[in-house]
Image (cartoon, rainbow, N blue to C red; front, side, top):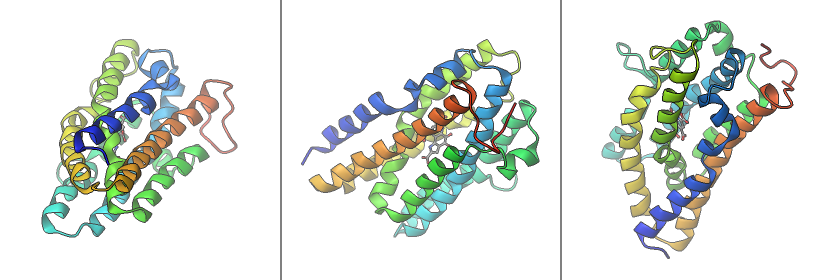
Length: 238
Ligand SMILES: O=C(O)c1cc(C(=O)O)c2c(n1)C(=O)C(=O)c1cc(C(=O)O)[nH]c1-2
């Protein structure tokens, strides 16, 4: 069995190799190499990820055994769903799709979604529901790597696209403080509870799985809208 520090290092090594910050589509996006229609396709598909995060967090929350743990995880639901007064992340994502000129009803209907987006996101929700609590919590740890990708994306998009404003990208600003807070808890939980070699391997596999599903979403966008540019039947067409 590894020490808790070695486990954390192994988790970080997975991110360094597999996080979607290394995906060509991410580089095109923040590098200003996409058309407005391609950015629309990204925002439209990513909406389904955002909208499904509260469902996965609610199913995780339901399995937490103590008030302290539930209170901690409940914060994520409020971050994404809002509190009825302050908008949450899902609402802020719709401000982004509005800003790109996409019709809200079309976005939330999911009619234009790539099938692969649906498969990947649904696999995440199912993973969290069906695997152990430890694996479910570990699968959220891609957020260790999200502040870097978000900073790159926001500064790059603001610099490189005239159709993007700080207002439309406002989704990302709170994530820069929410994600580290989420990670502080989830990483401490994982380091404490992965107390056998087998559990440590499960935790590492959970993070690999999560990196893979984020990567697959960008693969699907790239195939459909960049190269060879073959959107499947029914998917959004610019
Ligand atoms: O912008 C990104 O690339 C990115 C990545 C991730 C992630 O690594 O899963 C999340 C988010 N953003 C995000 O905004 C977010 O709310 C979020 C929640 C979770 C999760 O697994 O619970 N990941 C992410």
